[in-house]
Image (cartoon, rainbow, N blue to C red):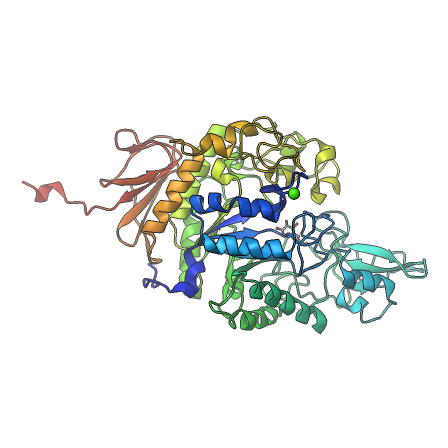
Length: 560
Ligand code: NOJ
Ligand code: CA
């Protein structure tokens, strides 16, 4: 199906890369303060190399008050002293590169932290000042400006406008924050904001960073002319699909990314970027354009239920779309914002995330064996697809979600800004278990900033290392097999008589077969390269994927 059948050069390294997401605070803690750090990452580079990933993506490690797990950045061109410093960052990049691993960093351009020097300057400066113009300030309504400029809901809670105290101590203007109140939105119509982000991108590119993941890439440009959007006139969960929405996915955002692309292309190889843009599939190509960021996350499978037809439509659409746009698509099941897929696939379809979390992850109770089987099958399936694959730290251990965290230990603003009503993203952000014993299961010599459950011991990396049949061994083998097998981006469906079985062929030479059904199915003839579950008498069990070397089938009536 794909026309992209030539082998691409090093500047296209990202097209089919396996990218491993590191959530720095929860990966590895070197100094024992309970918070993961850059030295911790450096110490685990051999692990990443053995795992076989092509690149890592680091969630924010910048100075932050952690109102939103680091997505509230106080300084875009520094490292949080709790995590390390710039010299250690350089060492980390060197260590990764020496191991053949590239690095993405996270850029958060929609909003800064309220601790950012520009926001602090805006608070001290008068209304109408250039300092305030870098953010989005408005007068309140009512006689004394005491009523919000509009009743807009933020992603993390009841309102998107917060009132400040003016330098003279009186109640003052209001500022916009689409997320937490500690995350004021930038005014992207202001040229200083535009210049400063170019400076940031250059800063990290010059330090050897290979790529960028762009946070809420579709939110930067807003139409805040009067009348302002309100909760009656505007539903934040529905984005107008024509580029004229008031807050998201406006066409003008691509003018910004065109300037970023110009900068990226001054490097050799050009720096790459992937947009986190929760937009309709038809709107993704603009972000993935080679004149823009170059690639956009495709979250379709992350939201899909375990169903062959659902998977089929998503894959078909995205593979075709990538060929049309010239970009390559991305596949992802887990990240720091969603319930880990080893748990998700063990929960009934349509379960209510908030209610499930409020019950401590017990109502309903996930079937973890089923969840893991499907998670491995799903991961092997996406590793067989053209495009790049994003893995989230801990999924290679088959780690389930830890949803039984005491409420007062939670950190996610979504949880405590909607008391009793929300789910939490903390359960996928719990520090990793490296060893089955030790105070923080080998995360570090001290404790852990989020509590780890006892059952982490059985999932620890040291328990799985070198063990036949462990999830870690499976991931290592799958990544190694992928590296050997994947050459070009060609892909074609193979019809399977069983409507619960997905079958496709890569490079005309090997097949991926996934059994979404409940009963085993016979595999086609040919060497089994790898399977997510043991093959019994030539049969692929339910909820499993296998890669099989393709053998030309000969019809028996030609034989004598
Ligand atoms: C998306 C990030 O992935 C999420 O963790 C964060 O809370 C929001 N953007 C706001 O930055
Ligand atoms: Ca630390």
